[in-house]
Amino acid sequence: MGLGKSERVRNHMKNWRKYLTMLAMAGIVLLVSFLVPMKARAQEAETIKSGVYAGDIDLSNMSEEEAISAINAYVETVKGTTITLIAGGDQAVQTTVGELGLFWKNTGLVTEALGLGTRGNVIERYKAIKDLAHDKKVYPIEYDFKVANINRVLLDKCSQYDQDAVSASLKRENGSFQVIDGQIGYHLDIEKSIDAVYNYLTQNWSGVSGAVTLVVEVEEPKGTAQDLEQVRDVIGSFTTSFASSGKERSANVANGCQLIDGVTLYPGEEFSTYEAVAPFTVENGYYMAASYLNGKVVDSLGGGICQVSTTLYNAVLNAELDVTERHNHSMIVTYVDPSADAAIAESSGKDFCFINNTEAPIYIEGYVQNKNITFNIYGKETRSADRKVSYVSEVLETTPPTEQINADAGHPLGYINVGGSPHTGYKARLWKVVTQNGVEVSRTQVNSSSYKMTPRIATVGVATEDPNAYNEIMAAIGTGSIDHVKAVIALLIPQEPAAPAEPTVPDQPEVADPAE
Image 1: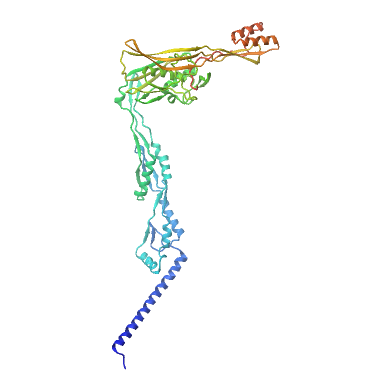
Image 2 (image 1 turned 90 degrees about the vertical axis):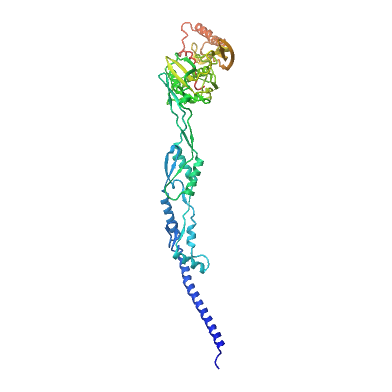
């Protein structure tokens, strides 16, 4: 009995499902048989799949080491790319991204590239490989830059174009003034410029040559021709003589004067005499000459420079400018009255400083002629013609130099050496006297000064085999009178003149002190 129609249909469907299942199993087996060997080969070779790039670099079939080497080699070529930095005064400074510290940042891309097509299940891996066959995979090469390198390039190559602003100034020649134009100042802002360069390189740089404008502060010069046209009048002047000075001291006075001559000072600006005339070196035009040091007269480079500062001090007083620092000498000087001096000293930090307290620029003219030093201060005269200013020195106390006698057993009786640098001690003060139409309207103390007394010193030989003579000379020394000692020596040695075994050292001239 044959099968019914419905039974035949069921058998047919059953056979068809079995057939489809067998086909599916065969497909899976074929797929697995294809992928498993591929996976095994990838694990053995550990190379990057075909179609994988780092930027423009084809990494196909490269090992990890090969890929890193290829990318590093490419980065080295990129390091030569030129970047122009615009510094102060629009100066173009050439550098490279390599000098600016370029380095390859995302080094992990090689590991990621190696793993492409080896992660996930069989289907995911198969899909990744098939995708590479149709479209390449490109990993971007990312760069970063070392801030320390940028800082170094800015300091070494760009800050050299920094310059201070130079104020417009005056030059006096043949009795007339010429205006010298000022100069704009440029100062590189290092911190802000580092940010500007770094931001450009990391955000805007496209891998080719480019330019960055640095952050530069511009400083405008002081003064205009109109400002300087106000300088027409002599508002203060003073002269001192150095006629008794030797060649070296005279040269020092002339040199210091020249270093100050021609200074233009704007309202509110302060002038330092020490900064203008220092350093006291041969290279700066100075010679060894007598000066004061700790109450003694010694030779030093620049001896006599304080006569320069003192002459300028009195010119400044006559101009009624604002004196901010002034010191008297340790011992009295002879070229000005007591308390009218102004010492400068490198060792003790003494300086003579003043401020232009007028409403117009001033010009300092200094010159030496016939062993006289003169300073004229030019400006705009605003004081009335009937108003006069003078300065009066008042001595409060005087201490005459004493005599100091030293017995020296190393020299024979009859030897006497009178030397040292005797100076009278003083206490004094300086008064500013203002008159109006010849009538005194004010008297103001300007300063007070104290000057050391230094003794006259004699060294007397006392070596003798005669005890009576020894007692006589020691008694004479005890009186403290050099003249009495000389008289006793003449009595003890009548046949021989009381000539010293060494030449007598004459008293030293009183001079200014650059190193007090």
